[in-house]
Amino acid sequence: MLRLIEKKVNDILTDPYRFKPLRKPMQNKRRVHVGGPFVLVYEINPVRKSSGALKPTRIILKWNPQLYCRATGYYF
Image 1 (tube, rainbow, N blue to C red):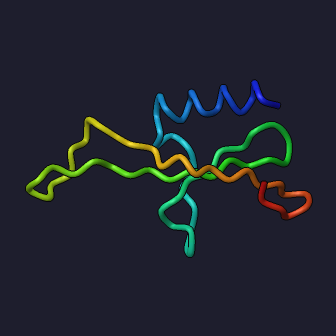
Image 2: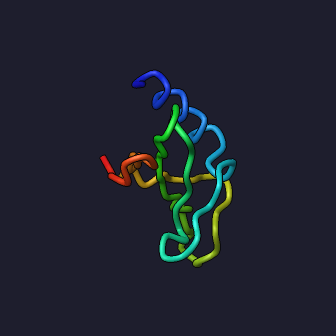
């Protein structure tokens, strides 16, 4: 299971916008399935320039992932 999570985190770091965005009330987060009923939820925080415009080349992932089990309904 740890290898699956590690692989998905590397996929997220490669292309963070690849996976499915969530709906309200979690509209700023995205999800990716990790082996069976487990879902990894993450958030993307783009870096802003001092002028307030988005800088598309650098992306910071807020590292507070939640692992969710669809079968039990629990977050880990």
